[in-house]
Image 1 (cartoon, rainbow, N blue to C red):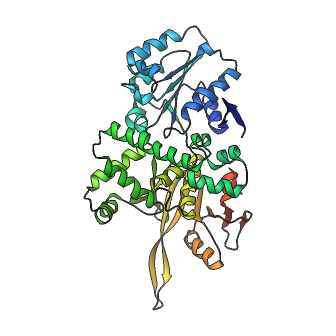
Image 2: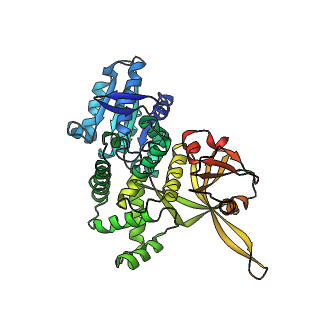
Image 3: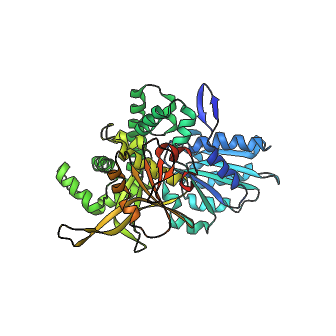
Length: 426
């Protein structure tokens, strides 16, 4: 991973995403770059990908950029004005490239994007900061001609390649402040904290309130706080409603909570990990676990309290698996343990993550520390109860080298897992 220095600041060459965009060039689809706001989507398109196009010999006149969230681009939120403008720019038989930022700000963008597919000699790339434009209706409208590329805040490997220094210091900083790219502009801890807090209130919360016409922002803020405290815990609207009543002395209906959770997911602030019955081979609809797209944003919600390593690790591992392209669920299965009277009692247990990609599947447990053999056996108990042949993995904060233990479980350190993209296949 190389660094690019511009205007005195360090920018990150996000090669993984640039390669994805290059691989999808001229495929007849609209390339949809999605993800949480401020994760670097605009920089990816306007700087990194544009630079790649220019390296390929594309003249600047054939690269059309429109940022709908800026004053200069506001007039193009009108679909007719925008469409007429694009038609005037696409001249001749050479391929042109449209880089359109924050497409969800355009009226009737579904019809506009569908119309762009019919223009010859135009390759289209758009960004958006909510999942509305990836809904079932839009997919149906595109008839399979929309190609999504999800952009996340910096992975730890991207963060570490830019920051450098000692691993332990970098890990401590990352699990505290996360991977929002703009954080590299700040050196003081107080400035980083202020940035993350403002990002939440002035960008994410404001967007959600305005987009969904929510008048009572206190309930949404409290829901975020409760969800942030509940990383690694099974939650559902019923349980959250009880938390509101017992902790906040507030009555909020379960349908309203479900709606707010959906808004937060649509803004890519949180992700829902559903439970998967491993032995029954079926999904369990509720309860689920919720993880934050960026651990620093989660910590900011709690004023940097409750930042124990175990919960942070679990959230970071979940995000890393998503970045690598896995479908990630929470594993659930029944085991039988010997009771006090010599009989066997059925007990429901969990596997932190079931990661699937095509025919590949990995069962993964996260543990901040494994100080004793007894602790390791406790962490492995649910893994060893699974009788299929897929790989079982235990990730810990230890510094041990990757190895298999006597039970056949792959033991990985969090360092090896995060810095080696092939670590699960060792």
